[in-house]
Each structure stands twice: as C-alpha cells, then as structure tokens.
Amino acid sequence: MSSYKINRRVSISNTDPYFPSISFCDLNPLSYRKIEAYKDDVQLANHLMKIIERNHNAVRAIEQEFRREMNYFDINITKEEIPKLSSDFKEFILSCRYEGELCNASFFVPFYDPYYGQCYRFPSQPLVAKHVGHLFAFQLFLNVNQSDYIPYVADDPGIILSIHENGYRPYLQSNGFAVSPGFKTDISLFQKRIERKKEVFGSKDLCDDSGQYTNIQTCFELCVEKIVEKSCNCSPTMSNVNLGLWICDGVEELQCMANAEKGTENCSCKNPCSEIQYATFRSMTTWPGKSYVGVLDAILKQRGVAYQDMRESLLFINIYFSSLQEEITEEELAYTVENFWSDIGGSLGLWVGMSVISLGEILELGILILRFIKKRSIRLLTTEVKRAAAEDKLNDGLNQIIKGFNDINDEKQEGRTEFNDGLNKIINSVNILTAEQQSRDNDQNGNYSDSMGRNVQPGQYNVFADHMI
Image 1 (tube, rainbow, N blue to C red):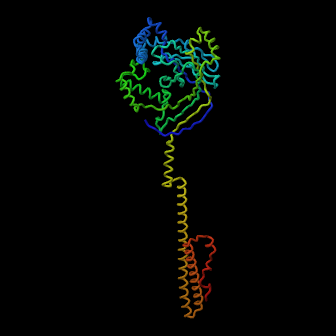
Image 2: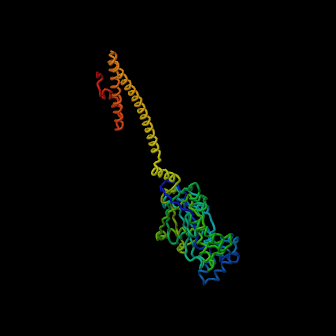
Image 3: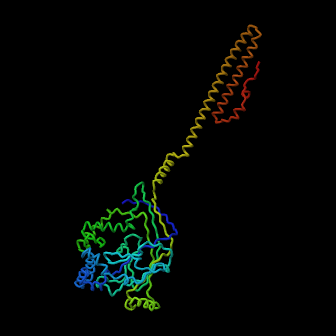
C-alpha cells in the first residue's frame, strides 16, 4: 500500500448535524425464562437448554458453546426463533425521549447480532439535532433484568452500546462499550468530519469513496475475517453466520488464525474519502438517588412492577451534543503536481538562470550590443571616408606646390598663387587627420560623449596657420 505525506487544515463551522445511530444490546443474549418456557415447543430453546444443563461445571466452555450453538444450530431456525426467546421491547426499554419528546417502538430498528442476540438501533430515520445539552438529550431508561440472565453465559450485567454514523454497521464487538446498571451515564458528543483528497498524480489512490466502510479499521477487520475463513475453514467472529463456519476455538484453528492474521499486507484498505467521527466524553453517577426512589417506584408500579424487584437492573443514559459546531479536517497531499513543476522551474532559475526576467535581460543586452556594433561601424566608415578625402586633398596640395615652384622658376605670376593654394590644402588635410586621430583616441579612452564631439572644431587642432605665405 502506498503512503504519502499530507497536510491538514482544521476549521470549525456551525452546522445542524444528524444525530448519530445508537446501537445497543443486552449483554444477556437470550431470556433464560423464555428458554425454560419454550424448551418443549421451540427447537432452539430445547437445544440450548441441554447445553446449559450439561456443562454447568465448565463456565467458560458453556459460554462459548452456547453462543456458537445459538447461531449454528440451524440458520433458518435461529433467525426465526431468536426474537421469541429474547426479552420483549417493552420489558427492556421502559422509557425513551428525544429532545424532550416521547418516542416509541417506531423510532427503533431491531436487528440480530450473532454474538449479543437481539439488538436495537435508534433512530429508524435520520434526525437533525437542533439543540444541545441535557434537556434535549436522547434519554433511555432500560431494564436489563438480571434475574433473567442465563447462568454461566452472561457474567456481567448491563448493555453494549455503539455510537456510529447513520447507515453503517455498528461492529459492537470492536467498537462498542459497556454501560452498567445502577448508574446514570451521560455521553456528550462533538462531531468531527475528515475530508480527504482522492486524486494522487492523476490516479485515484489516496482514499476510498465506495462508502462501504466508516473507517479503515473496519476494512482491516473484515479483510482479516475473510483471510481466516479461507485459510482455516473457521470464523474468528460470528458475523458471517450464513457461511455455516464454526468459530475458531480449537488449538489448531487458533494457531491457523494467528498465522493468517499476519497477512494483512494483502488487504488493500484505504481511509474513506469522507469520514465522520464522534468525540465522546462519558461520566457516570449513582442512580437513582434516594430522593428519586419514591418517584421511580410510582412510575414502575404503573407498569405492574416494583422498584425493589429491579433496582439492580435499571440504568439511565443521556446522549447529547455538547455543541452544534463541527470540526472539519481537510487532508491534501503535501507534494502535488503543481509543487513538482514549481520546483523544476525554481531549479532552472537557480542553476541555469533561465527565468522570464533573465530572458528579458539577455534580449535587452543583445539589442544594446547590436546597436553599439552598428554605431561603431558607421563611425569607422565615416572616419575612413574623411581620411581618404583628406589624403586626396593633401596630394592635390603637394601637386599644386610642385607646380607653383615650377611656375616660379619660369617666372610666371600664377606660380605663387598655385603654391599658396597647395600649401593651404596640405594644412587643411593635416588638421582633418589630426582631429580624426584625436577622436579615435577619445573613443579608446571610453569617452563617448556626443557633446564633446560636437564642441570640437577642426580649428582647435590646427598645427599650422591658415595662411603661412
């Protein structure tokens, strides 16, 4: 089974919760008085009575055999005859109230538990809790009638009770708790709801949304049952009566069951996607008090019984919500697909620098480099053109000077003019070449100021006067 790290987010919300299912059974599976009364007419009663009479010296053996035979004598007969041999509803449930209103048998659903016999579940239809506290509790006044307990089978008086979500099996043997007579038991409830994410990287593997189990422990219990029944040909509990398997109680069967229970790794159990839990707080006080005995005796006499005859068999239960608020726990994966891609992006940004901002900076740098190269190329081209023009002018000046000298030697008047023009051309060419050299030196020194270039005049670099002659 895969495991994942999860994050939990807890919140509190106001709600009108459904009152949970309350399943309860008498710890005495059948009525001893009725078994004796029907032993000649009811096959199951006759069979069970023989077990009681035969094994009265072996206390533990009779309890195991009695509960086993109660289920496996004949499945069809058992289902039909168990209600006949159980305590009557009115004898067992003396009074009931829900949020101050009386409730009757229609509020209860009778069901059969293989271990505890006849049981009841409240309510028959889901009820919304509108109030909190003792005054609006579900109140049960019960009579377990210890005088009717089967000898050697039920060694402790009281009831087994389970509080669970509506619509699900109670699992009384593993999730139930005992309530003793002679006490008033207060049970306050606070509802908790757990919501789990189902998707895990595209696969539905984190939780179970079938609605078959209320919690993961229930799933494991049923899985172990199936493994034991298949491997050992017996049952660790009495839940699967229809299979006709005997309960595992022999030495070899118990050893087989212990070995089979080690194979839980083959159970594909997952937590339910939506789970409701009830946090309970229980308190007990001696009941009834001396001041209430007279009142209780008067109430019981209306039913034809006396308090003195049943004082050790009475118990009172209050079950109520302590708050209508609900604690919601939302579970989600600590590491999701979004986190995965985010981590990849973060790593690339750290080690390669390939973030969106970095790409923008690289693009800007490329544009600046291209602009610099273009500007540099234009400047170099302009400089070469100016240099070529200056050199041409210098050559022309030299030629004119040579021609002027020749004319002067020939005593021609134009010779002096040619000489002066050629000399001026040479001076201008030298000034232009000097200015370009100075501009190139400034570029090499990092001085790219346009203003300096604009303020520099060719005259500033004259090395000769405009008119030497």
